[in-house]
Image 1 (cartoon, rainbow, N blue to C red):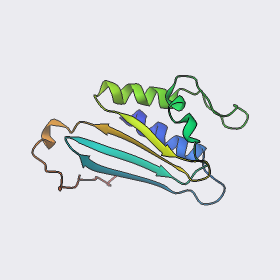
Image 2 (cartoon, rainbow, N blue to C red):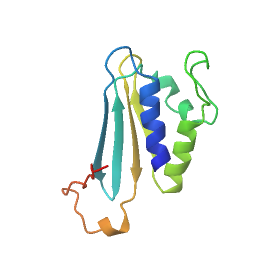
Image 3 (cartoon, rainbow, N blue to C red):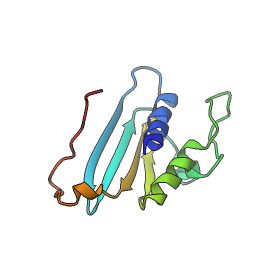
Amino acid sequence: MTQVFQNLIGNALKYCSPGEVHIRGTATRDGGMWRITVTDNGIGIDPGYHEEIFVMLRRLHTRQEYPGTGMGLAISKKHIEAAGGRIGVRSSPGNGATFWFTVAPAPTESSRTEDTPAAVDTAG
């Protein structure tokens, strides 16, 4: 999961719009799964490319425009699907992006109800 977060947050920073960068993460219960979102105020993605960006080595920009290999989101998708989850994006050009993915709760969380928020450890 660390690599998934690194890819999503790294992309939010890489594809940011000029000015102040805003990145927000949330975690909520969605049925029996956790739904994690990472939202940014970046350049956005045309809906016609929402599936393509998860294909290995598929880039929407040249390396001169934005560095990278075109593997980050494809690797993230493989990790999420291997864990039994799904991943997707909601975005449009100029309006930032919200990447979401689902994962099963850890075994120790099985007694937690949907209304119980997840604990967040902010101590470094």
